[in-house]
Structure formats: C-alpha cells, structure tokens
Length: 302
Image (cartoon, rainbow, N blue to C red):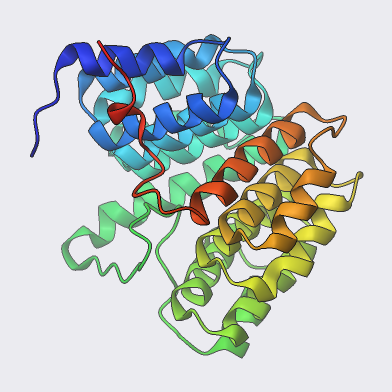
C-alpha cells in the first residue's frame, strides 16, 4: 500500500470543504479521500456535514459506508439522529451504517426504523436486515458482486429473471428481499435482467425506485436510458429518485445522456440541478482518456 503524506490528504480535504470550488471538483476530492482511507480522510469527510448541499452530504455518507471503517460510526450516527438534516442525507447515513455492518449499530437502526420520515425508516429496516444477515451468515458469505461496491443486501440465491422480477415488484415482500432480487438481477448483466430491473422504477417506494436507478447506473447499459429519463423528467417524482436517475445517466455517458442532463441543469430542485452538474462531469470523464475519476491527489500541490 502506497503511503500518502498527511499534508497531501489535508490538501485534498481542503478542496472537499471549500464551498467556493465547483461541486464537481469537490466530488472528485471526496472520492479521492474514499480511496485513500484512514483517520485523516475520515476526519476531512466528517467535517463536511455542515455543508448546505444535500447532494454532497449524501455522497459523504455513501463514501463513509463504502470505506467500511468502524471509526465512521459516530459520525454517521450523529447524522442519522439529526432531524434537521435532509431525509436523503439521513437515509444515506443509515445505509452506510448497514454497509459497515458492525453489530454495535443494531440498536440505533432499530430505533430509527420507526422514524416518521418513511425513507429513513425503510433504510433502517434494510440496514438492520444486512447487519443481522452478516451476524448469522458471516462464515459462508459469498460475494459475486462484479462492481466492488458494498451493497445494502446480499443478492438472492436464484438467477431466474422472471422469478427475480416477480419478487422485485411484489409490494407484499420485505424491502430486504426485494433488494436481494435487485442485486441478483444486476449481477446477471444481461439485457433481459436490465429491462426487468428498469420496471422497478415504477415501484411504490421512493427509496426502492432510487436504489433501482443507482443499480442501473452501475450497469451502464444504454437500454435503460428511456426509463431513467422518464423519472428524471417527472417533476412530481421524489427528488431523491430524480437525483439518482441523473447520476445513472452520467455513468452511462452517451451523447443522448449528455443532452438529457443539460435539459435539467437549471432544475428548480437544487439536488437535481447539482446532480446533473456532477453527472455531466462524469459523462466527460467516461468519454475522456483520463485514467481515473478520483484524481485530486495528482492535482493538489502542498
């Protein structure tokens, strides 16, 4: 493992926490810190939860979960407990606690699984399911995730697309099991499984629709563009879902995606507008010879 000077990590942290910098630069700094890890990176990310961008704070929480460092638990717990934080930020903090998966977070997740904000309550329910699943299944944990992400649930054990789609769209099933079907469909990576997943953008739960959009972004399959565009264009759709559709389009990064994202760069919902800005930077990156998106380390000078 390459040792990175503390001063360099501090410089990247300053980029992340500088509200005068373009959001796309701050995002790249965040993902650079996520990749570096360690106490100094965690500290810089933790300081940024005072920001006024819900989108950025949501991504901070996501990165802390993906880092799977138990030292982030107090930071994430504080965010989840803070009812002044936006629902999408609190939701992501709960999901991140589930991603870390330590049994010590069980109590806080039980408490907030009864939160009056439905997206927060549902996320806690899923995160709790993951923590308990890990506790019971740790010895024979099988991870066939081709995306190297820490998912909110393990995949389902079947690979039958029709069966998985039936579970995915069954409102009587627990969200935990529906998420399991979602990740199995993603892992299949066929056009049939992608189109089955895209039907989930019509699900009743906003949290569920947002996760479907995230997964379609991971897949980067152009056949999902019309479905993502439809939800982004729907002004009545939950902003958390619209934001995730924008970021998924940014990951797919075709010319059509760029054109759609440009349409919503001035959206009245700040989180949608900012998501389009960040997604367009991702489009640019995907269509460039750049080696990596999280490139701030090479750009800061101490």
